Structure formats: structure tokens, C-alpha cells
Length: 407
Image (cartoon, rainbow, N blue to C red; front, side, top):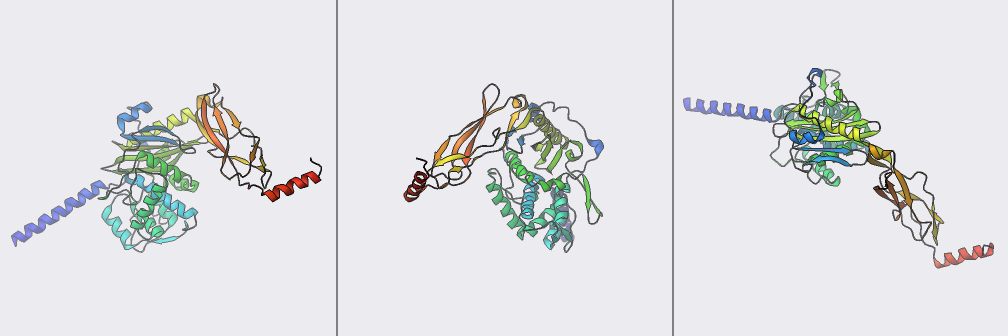
């Protein structure tokens, strides 16, 4: 009996230690007090970021231009920053009409088991509990709730596994070559769950295209369950950095402190991604430093021609003209020091010969600074198809012109 007792005691102790280890690997995101906002003096310039974090990137949202990168393609564990893809797929499902923010989601037994066993940030969903898609999305965006993420995954795809397949497929569509997801939360996994600062910036940019998501990512404090359960944003930039639009924090012992931060001022929006910072303050200070650098040094200028592009004549076409259109971005990211002297010129023919295909390059827009240095060039393309006249149509056309006295 004593031997059996020792075995039982050993198993109990092992179970407790195992649970303790799992809890340590999935700590809840920190909830911050205003008084805790402290500067990290070691970060004085953008160059200092490399001294404190192993990977980072700064991207401008409108054009996707990368301004700064540090080991941006190094594959790392992203912790809860993973939920950017979870929110993206949810936003796309909402805007496509597949689901509604008012849909009632009933928590499954799996969600309750998941919440009680995995820990981390959560809203403690119980089997059979009902919440709307909006409440769950808010819980993910603000409080990084893991159980809310799984509930959304089940509602959209039927199961978390099916949803993870959707996440990886969407990542591939976006060109996120450094990424493979194993779950929708970012909690520690035995399977490969890796991404990079570069790929996080890509999916962050895609998420920010859904403007309504900022309704949730900019909340500082709120609640669910009719005010009974409070939510505090894990991203303290929302409260303390002017123009913050989101986006997502992350922390596990393996990933350390991660962040995708976005902010908008004076019509320009930047995305700063910080990976594996040693402390929470460092990740926020590094993100602030990158965002400050972007706002201080860059601006957007129109990349379109000064006036409306005139239609181009089409010879021997079933129509007499085609409308040229700009193929690329309508805005260009430039340094503020050159913005006031930007000069735009158009190289385009007076006429074209049919057939002309929609999307066919027919000219070029050049953007130069005041010294003449080329900043960018954008293709000008045909706006639609213009087919070629048949021999009979050509004969009839010229016969009409002859009868009209044109010749």
C-alpha cells in the first residue's frame, strides 16, 4: 500500500508541475495601468532598435513600401500576433456576407475545454454560452481572448483545424512565404507555428484595408456579457500614442514580447512590427520609434498625372478611341524633403492601331524630384478592349466617308 501511495503522490506532483509549465508558457497578455508608461532610454534612434530586438519592420500601409527592416524574414514564433490572421478571415467573412456581426455563436464543449486547459488570455466561455460575432471579435481585438478566437474559427469554418487550413491558404495568397500556422491563437504548439516580421506586416496591411476593424482595435476599455466582464486592451499604444489604429500584441515565454502596431496621422498610416523583445516596454518603445521615424520623414504625394488623361485615337478600331488609365498606386511615398518639388510627366502616343486589349500598356507616367532624379514610373494602360474592324467594315466605313465628302 505504501508503494502504491508513493506512486500516486509522484503522479500528482508530476501533473502539478506539468500544469505549472503549461501555464507559464501561456501567460495572459499584460493589462497596463496609465502610470506604467515609461520610456526606455536605450532607444534614442532607429539604429538602436537592433540593440534591443532581433527582428523588426516599418511599412507604409497605402503603398506597402518597406522603409526599415531588421532581419525581417527571420522565421519566429509570433504568439498572439497570430490573431491578426484570425481577425482578417473574420473581417473578410463579414464583408463578403458569409457571416454577420449579429450572428449568435454558441460555445462548444471543445471551446470550454480549450479555455479551461490552455489558459492565457480568455473570456472564460462555457459550453452552450451564446455571444455574437461582434462580441467575440471585440474580445479578440481588445483582450486577445484565445477562447473567443477558437469560437470564431468554429463558426466560420466548422472547426479550428479547418480554420487553420484557411489561415495557411490565405497566407499563401498574400505571398507570406515565411509563414505556417498551427492554430488560430498563437499559443505554444508542437507543430510548426512560425512567421516573420515581414509577413506580419503583410497581413496587418491586409486587415487594415477593412476599415471597420478599427472600431475594435482602437478600444481601450470595454466589456462583454452586458457589462459583467471587463476588457482592457493589451496594446497600450491605443491609450498613449496619438493616431494609433491597432493592431495586436503577443507574448509567450518562447516568443517573448511581440507587437504589430499601426498608427495614422495627416493622411498617412504606418505599420511597425517588433518581434521577440526582451520586455514589454522595449517592444512599445521600439514601435513608437519606428512610427515616429515614418511620420517625421515621409509623406504621400499623388502619383496620378496633373490633369485627366485624354482619350487616345484608335485607328481601324470598332470604336474611335480608348481611355487610358493608371495601372499602379495613385499615391507615392516620398521623403518630405522632396515632396514639394515633385514633377510628373506623361509619355503616351497620339494614336494606337487596333486591336487594343484592356490592360495593355500604352504609355508611362514618370515622377521625378526637382533635380530630375527618377522617383517612380507607372504604366499607363488601356481601360478597355477595342477590336479591329473587319475588311468589310473598313470598306463600309471609308465608303461612308467618301459619300460624306470627307475625301
